[in-house]
Image 1 (cartoon, rainbow, N blue to C red):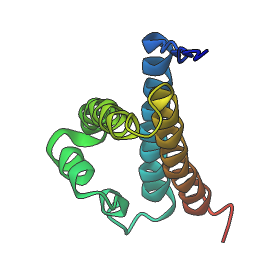
Image 2: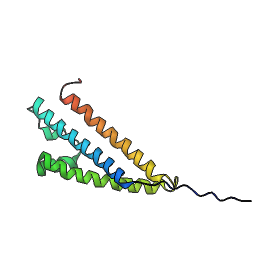
Image 3: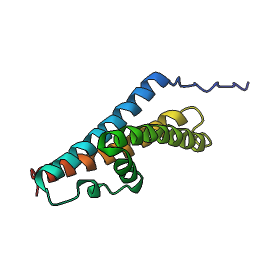
Length: 131
């Protein structure tokens, strides 16, 4: 007798996902502001906005100021994160049909976590805590 196994579908709680994404983006933008403020304080001859390596973020900072640019770029980062989640989940769906959302979220959280660690390192460096 042939038995047909049903695949278990994993529920995806969008509220938690959106809160996690929002937390990561706010943490990243907050560290960016802290880095720029640390450069303004500790290296007054340096143009603080110039430490930002991302040209899109730098454009928003120069166009709307540090705080306004951070908010606008934060919204853009939030939407980009969701788009990346959708695209990565869609591509993973061909290999892992029941858990593609979870895998995609973990991959993006790890990637964004590395970005946040990089910003945190530079915060320590610009405050002259690490050489």
